[in-house]
Structures are given as C-alpha cells and as structure tokens.
Length: 90
Image 1 (tube, one colour):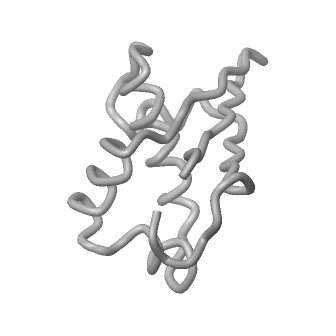
Image 2 (cartoon, one colour):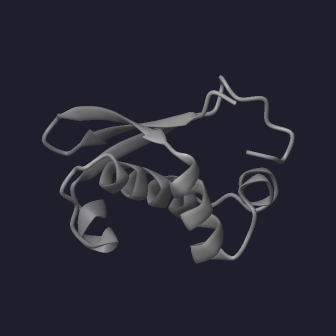
C-alpha cells in the first residue's frame, strides 16, 4: 500500500499536502470507533475527511489548533485515495 494523502487549502490561499500515515489511520479508527473502510464506503461524513487532514497535518509537524478552531482557517480539503486499492482494508 502506497498510502493516502490530503491536500489542505487554507483561507489565506496557502496549500500543503500531507501523508495520511498508518498512525493517523489508527487514530481515526480509535477516535470514531469504526474501521476506515466502513467509514469511507458506508458512513462517510465530511467531518471524517477534515479530521484526517487535521490529524495528518499535526502528524507531519504542522502547528495546528484544536479541531473546531482549525476548521475556521480551512477553505478546502481533498483526500487522495487513488493510489490505494480500496477493498475495505487500508
């Protein structure tokens, strides 16, 4: 598996792309108490995408505020799963 990535565009126009690492995926599953495969195939919410971006940015060393405050600074997030075969197992 090559991995997922998220492109984050902030309201100030700056952009950055962060890897969604195995640690970030496990933290997602622990926080939401649902597997990534199920969450993104059957129960996807925008919050899931934004939360992954927030956690991935933090894991990459970016200074991030608490999640809800961070959302105020975000224009868009694009989750790239194209390079990963998605059979329900990350």
